[in-house]
Image (cartoon, rainbow, N blue to C red; front, side, top):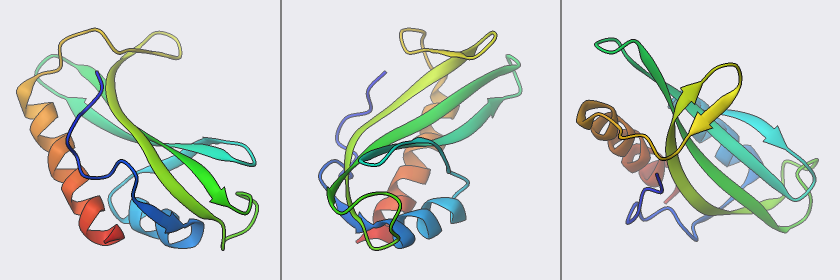
Length: 114
């Protein structure tokens, strides 16, 4: 599920600040290459024993990700339910408590990047 109206789409940050800000909130930069990266945050639904991942993509608009001074732009923000063994289901409904937690983290990230 794509999360709309986060205010993050189009925001820019240098890599060092983005890494520091996202790590404070529990995000991890998992997947990356020279010009793009994906940051993930694991959210656990203890009621249903399901894991969800809040994810946002960034793309380098200046420099490459091997430099902490690279300037990145946030693209899409989305959430999916973890599936076995290593996938995400973006079509499954997401419990409201998980969405509330995701939106709270996204607003905190927006404040850190502003």
